[in-house]
Structures are given as structure tokens and as C-alpha cells.
Image 1 (tube, helix red, strand yellow):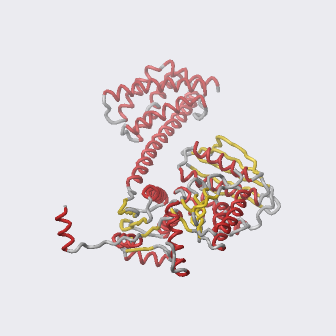
Image 2 (cartoon, one colour):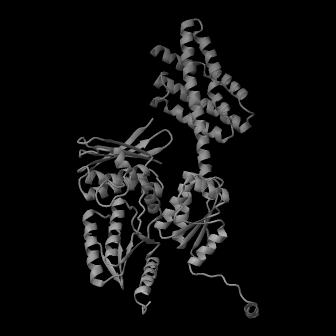
Image 3 (tube, one colour):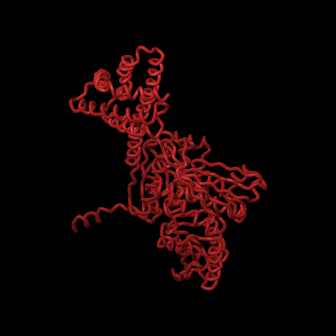
Length: 135
Length: 295
Length: 130
């Protein structure tokens, strides 16, 4: 049974907000006792997704939740925007690194850096990406 | 329902002495021989438990043991199980602490409300459910302690089994022994990369002579380690590739392109030295005599 | 901070990235860099990222752009000081930073630049001062 112990919501409207999200995630990861590598992974994933939200979603929100399961604690990050949405999610996830525009590594990379990854997106209906990293 | 709740607590209060005594006797029968100190502790724990249990029934009812009123009982059972687990008791011996309370309790119930068959049946059932739930909780807590111990020991083992050795200034060796799974690779990578920073090494030789199985996953882990070291400016060589491993790697279609691989650690070391511009030269007889004379 | 300082070290330029990069800062850096490479006829760029605890695809792209731009202007780029946790994460992220040379620290980075330039020099001018 998963319990949400704590929840914090941040706005993503500017480049500085992306930095703020990273710092907030780092703080929570440290508080949860994540090792350095795990911290780096979850903070990097949050940076990717926050940037996506800003660049492709036209801005949105990041929700940081501390989770508790019977045996362990974790950090869940939910990124939401009301942007144009993604037409082909499969493709967005498997796209390799592309210089310039395009999602590049954002989605696929975040998935690889996380223990759990969920995405909901429809053209014209915005995007919602949720990742979890367990301690 | 209120009337029947308080009945259980009432009975505990009224017949505490006889329930406790009967219970202790049954506990002794169900566990291995205990030292006098352990026996003394068991008596103390039993009294404490009965008191805590009685309070919980009075304030929280018997419907469920998950509520806040039952927290003291749960906490007691958790520390009890942990202590028993560490004391070398078996799971059964630990859970029997709870289950052996059934008979004394039923006996007390029968004496109190034996005349009313229906009431006796209801109370007995309620008591059974309650004790079963607590017994299971005790078992689970016991399990968790065991699992925590195993996890801790595994972590220690992991630390011990990935030493990084400096062969020469600028050359590190990482002799891997055993299976390479995801969690181990993580520790291995970190140790190696930290060592590269600390020793300012240019080369790292990963020797897999002691790795019994190399499948796609292991190969991927190795390649990730090589890639990470490269990002930090160090070159990795892989040595200890046995003939069978070489065949497996080709058949799996793993691409070890760009990674220097050698059959032995010695060969890999020689390559690293050469790349750093070192040459090993054998002294001639005259030089040897001269050096010996100077010493 | 509104621009990243660029330090001239002989034929090389040294950039130390210590703050969280955002778009404007990255573009300003690229502009300043190209301008200085041309002005000082620099042959090598050293980018010190030892203070960066996070390198995401944005920074990765920026490093790639800097390397490509510099190459067009006849300068080689070496990225130095990547932290172990960052290296592990980048590999997991799938970013290879292909075409970008790396070194453990500034000192080793300069050695890399010297040796590669030495090779190039050998072919173009035999009276090299190396």
C-alpha cells in the first residue's frame, strides 16, 4: 500500500523555474537518504522533464511527492502541462539524441533514469509524466 | 456490541492471574529451553503484553488491530519479534507467544460465560480472530528483521568484493570475482570511478577472469562502466576473456568496438604501460654489477 | 551571473562552469567564445565541469555545440573534470558526448590539447616550437 507523506507543487514558467525544480528535487532526495548516484539520476531526470514541460508544453507544473511503501520510501515527480500534447508517444520515447529541436533524450532518458515511469498525452489535451525513484 | 467488547477486557482483568500463569506454562512448553534470564524476561514480557492488550481492547475494541488504539500492542510485538529473531528463536517459537494465549483465554471465557452457549461461541470466535491477527503480525515482524539482516550482510559483501588496485602510476586494475548483476555493477562502477579521480589514473583494466557467466546483461554493464570512465577521460581495457567467453560475446552480437580487450591482465598491463610511454628494460650484466657495487 | 568568464591561457581558453546554466547564459557563452577564439586565434578550449553536479541533455547539447563551433574555427575542445556520479548518469541517460574529448582535470586536458596540436603541427610546420 503506497502512502503519500508529503507533497509540494512548483510552477514551471521560466528557465529559472527549471533550476528551482532541480534544487527542490535534490533537497528531497537528500532528505530521503538517497545515495549520490541515485540523487544525480533523479535530479537529472527532473531537469529533463521540467525542460520538456517548459519548451514543449508551454509551461506547467511539477509536483514532488514523498512516498512510503511497506518496506521503502521513494520520491515521485509529476510533470503536467496544457500544451499541444504528443501525437506519437512510442516514437517520442525511442527517439535518439537529436541536436536542436525535438524531444531528444528527455522522455526516454528520464524513463531509463527512473524505477517507474508513466505518461499520458493526447494531441491538444496536454501531457502528464510521472516518475518514481525508490530508495 | 459494546457489551461484548468490554466482556473480553473484563475477563482479562478478573482472571488475569490464572490466565497469565496458564499462558506462561504453555509458552514454556512451546519453545526451546530458556536460560533463567530468558525465563525472567518472558514473564516480564507476558505481564506487559497482557496489560497492553487489555488497554487496547478497552479503548479500541476488537474489530480491527490496525487502528491507533492498537499501536502500543503492535509496537510491543515488533520489538518482541525483533529481539526473538536476534536471539535465535524460530518463527514458530516466536509466534507461539501469541497462539499459546488462546487456550488459557478460552478456558477463562468458558468459566465466565459457559452457561450461555451462543455468547461463548461469539466471544471465542472474536478472541480467535484477534489472536490470529496478532500472531500473524508477530510473524511478519520476525520476517522483516531477518530480511533486514540479510540485506545488510549483502551490502557488506558487495563492499568487500570489489577492490581496486593500483598497478602503476596511472594504471588501475579491477579484478572482478563472481556474478555481475545490476546492483553490483553500480557499486563496482562507483568504486572504480572514485579511484580514478583519487589516483588521477589514465587507464583502468577490468579483469573478468573470475566472472563465471558473461551474458548480454553483464556485457552491457561492462560497456556502461567503460563509457563512464571514458567520459571522465580514462581508458578502460578488459582482460581475462576466456575462449568460451569470447565465443559467447560474438554469438550474442555484443559490440565491444573501441574497447581494447586482452586475454590476460598481464597483456593489458603491458599495453597500458606502452601507451603511457613506459618501457620495461632489462639491465645488462655490466649495469647490474655496477648497481650492485653502488648499493 | 550574467556571463561565464573565459580565461585566456596562452593558446588556450579556459571556461569554468560553476552555475546552473540557462538558455540565455548558454547563448551568451557561445557568442563570447567564438568571438574570443577568433580574436586570440586560440587553438584549444578547455571546459571545466568539475563543479557541475548535474549534466542534463541541455548541457550536453551545449557542450556539443561548443565543440562543433570551435572545430570550425580550428580549435579543439576538451571537457574536463566530470564527476563520477554525473558520468554514470549520463551513460544511463544515453548521452555519449561523441566527438567531444574528455580528460580528468585541466592539467591532463592541456596535455591532450598539446599532443593533438603537436601531431597537427608536425604535418603542417616542421619548425614547431614544441
